[in-house]
Amino acid sequence: MLFCDHLSRQEVLEAKQTNREDLLAGLVTDFRKTFPDLTFELQLDFSIINAQALRLANQQLVTIYGGLALHPRLGSDGLTLIVLHEVGHHLAEGCRSKRDPSLACECAADYWAVTTGAANLRLRTDRSLQMQVAIEELDQVMGSGQPSKGRYTKRNAPSGCWAGGWLARRRALLARDRSPQTTGC
Image (cartoon, rainbow, N blue to C red; front, top):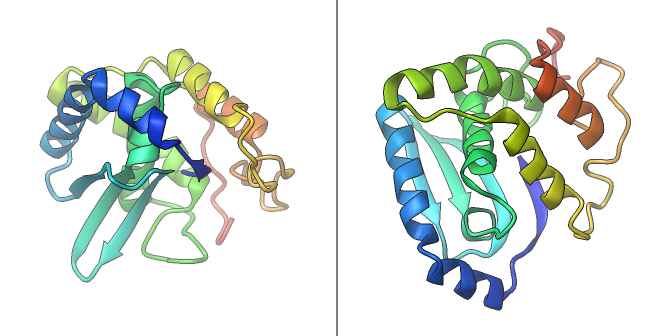
C-alpha cells in the first residue's frame, strides 16, 4: 500500500513518546509467528508514510516505514490491515504485479489480506482485524490533506481492478470482494 508524503519530525517524536513502539513490537511479533517464512522489519527512522513487499534473492521482505508505523491516525487495526496487505503481495495467488510478477497485484493482495491473511493471523495469534475500524483509520489517512498525486482518485482500470481508487478499494475491502482474475490488472 503506497501512500505519499512524510510525517513531520514533531509527529514522529510525539508518536515515539506514546509507547507506540510497544504496539509495533507486538504487531511484528504476531506477524513473525503467523508468517515465519517472511522477514518483517520496521524502519522507524524513515518518515515516509509507506510499507512495501519486496523479494530480494530468496528473501520475502515486508518493510514498514516510520511515517506509516508512527502515523497518529493509524491504530492497531489500520496497521494490521496494511501489513496483511503487504504479506498478501507475497502469498496471494491470482493476478500478478506488472512491476514484479513474483508479487501479487494490489487487489489480489487486498482480497488475500481480508480473507486468508486475517483468518491465519487470528488463528495463530488471536489478533483479530476489526475491518470497519481499519477502514475508518485509513479514511483519515487518505483524506488527511496529503497530496495523492491522483494515486487514489483514478477510476477503476479496464480490467476491473479496484486498486486505483480509494472509494472502490474501500468498498471491495469491506465486501471482501474477490479480486479480478486477469493478468496484470
